[in-house]
Figure 1 (cartoon, one colour):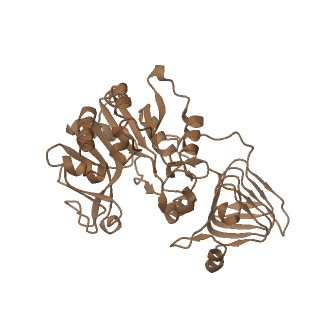
Figure 2 (cartoon, helix red, strand yellow):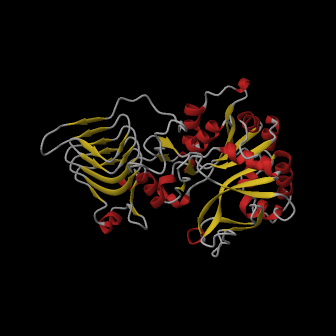
Figure 3 (cartoon, rainbow, N blue to C red):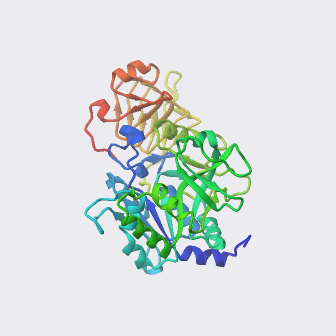
Length: 422
């Protein structure tokens, strides 16, 4: 069915239960995830990463959603309850938190497949025809209705959402699918050094996005088999997919933008460098990720805050921001902010210069500071006269972390401040 009708699509989405896997630690982000799970990390001036798969669900018409949590989930749960707790179960919609609670074993979630297996009874209670399993720690806009339609049309038991990426980029980084001309999956390798390329393009391969659609009963059957296998690592990529591709209908769904003329956008912000770069990309006059597109809004929880304010217009101290995102409650007082992303309630004091920085909420930058190519974690107070990002040896000597690409991370602990900001 080349152009499924709206009614057909609405039936598919109504018969789907989405499960977002949001328990990831995000260890490659180092101290940035010491006090929060990766899906609760801030992004884009006012959002958190979890807002993107949640918004994709709601915009796609999928309104029954479970969020699987585990690692340091307090800020994630708090954010979801505040921003996503308004759905009404009696209208067939809900966003529910599913923490690790040892429902089927004495262990916490042991892997992605086990996280779903331990919630089988909750999923069954929803009576869905399809279960969509989504990664909770990527930045992208995607209409899941297209994925569901492709799954139903192909008669697949499982469909894997994939992104076309250069083979050199995928090597050692992504799970890679080998497919035939009809996108039926013939093989799967987890982070291979020599990825199998597309049948018609030796320069590109299909990398898994960590998003799957299953027929519900088929999913339950495979999860029970996996749970009984003592050699399994309880992972969809490592165990479930390789075990079913020979005997069952498993297809790849190449991710395309739902909007004409747009390139498909997907970012794994799992390292300090990729997190910084993805935020910087938003500053382009025409960014690849358009947060201002009201056809596909990204929903979130946001405090009621006063407007951003820029004060002083003297020759030696002028409050201004250039090529930057500045959120509510910020005050730029006689300072210059250039090519930076400032989250809510950031204060930059007189004579300071901030360039190429991602400043998380509630940060205070005192007078005469110079900050370049940095990530400043929530709640930091940068002492007067501090210089960050200009001399990496000095940065390291003060206990700051310098990434591979030269991005400097500063947290409260590094500044000797009390811990606990999320």
